[in-house]
Image 1 (cartoon, rainbow, N blue to C red):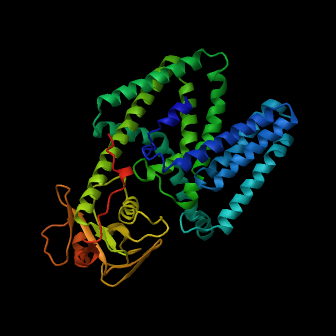
Image 2: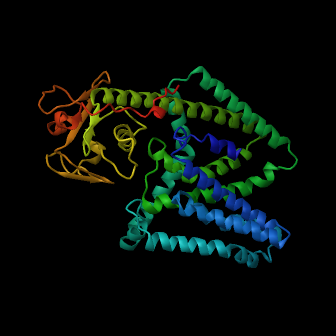
Image 3: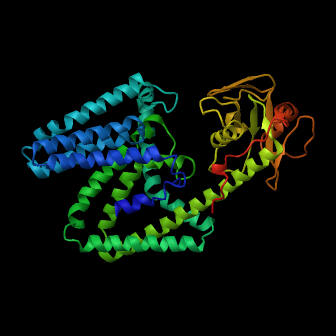
Length: 439
């Protein structure tokens, strides 16, 4: 049940961006495999098998160095280890065996924390909790407890509230209903198998599931709370719900196991079916917005055949939810400078309201703009906008406009299309691999 709920969990609404989260899911899979391999290792009868399984578990745990989303799950390892050692070694001997098995993982965790807190200090995310505790512990502790409670309520309850909101707001097509029905049917098959299987005793394992799942749920949020990273069930910060995915799915399945067989079956298949429809709706919304992005770049290449290197492109208040300025910036460079790699940006696209006062110091001429590998100047700027019919407008400081969206009216005096648009040097093309229509 837990695996099925994790696959369609409505708290994470970015499954349509599968490639972007390939690293996240790969590391999560390795972390979960590490816990499973550790359990296999302590149950192995031969020493060679124990060493092999423990070695695999330790190596997979090291995958967390590449992304810190799931380092909190490492704190649940002692609980998993202790539960299985008590069953195998008995109450009298399990403590000695515990330290023998856990020591390599404790060394890894201690080394990781020293590296992350003391040595490696990236600009983002920064670990701010330690400083707050040192400066004002009486304020930091209550704030932290309230944040924990709020986030746990969000991932356990708020995710399903968001599901209902999306189901009511977005259209439901026939194929979505078919997908939801199929998901509910698969969920029913899973439950029938679990209920009838003699090898799986839901009543016998539910307390263990709730204990381990509860620890994963609480410890999973440690990276977010330590760095004060936001958590919501709406885009874009619903990606941080991945930290809680394992704990939420296990606790949910444990709670379902407490119910009677009939109620559990009905509730489980309803949840799975609705969650499948939810994910289908979100995927369709991604496709709809991607069509808008494709149309934007089609219009842009028609009106701007080529763009002078070093040009800063500004916009504001585009009707995009899922595709940020960073996404559009990559497409801009790919379209107008396809031969160069991502490490050498010739163009930069900013959303004004997002960057003003930061990477974009002010809406004034002759200001140096540096961001990543881009080096430009506000005197070489192109300001673009979309009208009410989503037609692209190339703004010109020499013209007068009655109505402009967002803060583009404040930036229009910087736009010099006559200086940055190159009409006789070829025709830019939106990457053909991205030009295919998505249904």
